Image (cartoon, rainbow over all chains, first blue to last red; front, side, top):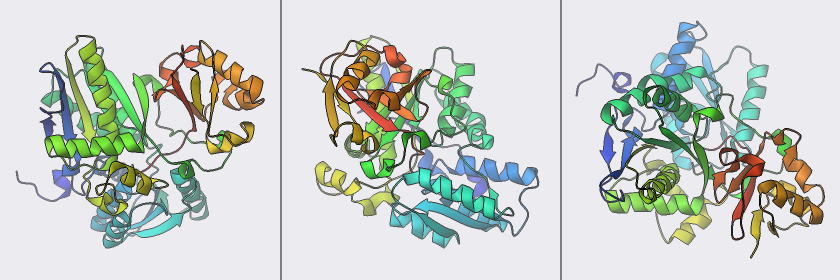
Length: 315
Length: 92
């Protein structure tokens, strides 16, 4: 397939069946390979839509500076687009994120400001807000509250899924900014009566939850619980086990967050099978495993890998 | 057998530092009431007049109780309940 430029190739990712992990001929799992996007993750979609929207509103002009709290993929997508369009990019990123992500960001010319590991992304969001207030000329696209994030998925990911899988019964994705689930979920709810929308949320080690008061937690502004059917918290050990299973059984080398999503997808598949219902369950492979090799997730025993992930933002 | 309740670091002042405690009850509300009789003040950190506090997530066997039945979610012996603060998550 031919495109005028890299950005023109955004989206249109393959949906592949999982014949070995699907539990029955009428209960099938389908993986949408979002690692096949320009910078290798699903975040290229919202990043592109958020930049386009900001340009349309006149917020971004050549030489402008974009600031974003991000622990990786969104930052990488924005850094690439910023680089091509002549913007400066500053990422506020928790210090406990993998070295690959930092190196890629630096290659695209982004500046990284580290936020403390304790508190995870909550802390990065807080720091970015403070910086944005101090530098009113910087443009914070703010993926957690930017409607263009969810709209990217409403306009592209959702329609692609339905076109490839008209009999879709379930959609499963990771919950972070909530943009994927809100956008695809709303689109599918309009088109497919009774569709089940499932969120898989990573459960981190204790360090990530920090020592702050529970009243200072964070719920993304985009989040609307009514779009979801249910929501699972998936441990690092389940996510790692499923990440390896996906590679082993189907040959797909995915990032660790995909293991968490697969874990929830398999739970829905087991439930459908038990109830004697047909199911076509689509889930998102947010990125491939390359950026996480240095975390040790893919080598040694599962227990060793889990111990190495403690305290890291693995999804 | 009882119901295991996992407590996040920030709330362990109420459990004498214990990472998990055990309790009983037929619903989540009853379970929290039972816990509060031994760990006074814990319940109030999780629940207000409107139900579960906004930045508190409670999972029954890994599933968010807000999608199950909230405080009226039935619980049984052998279940695991996990309490976590809401966070912004990871690779965004």
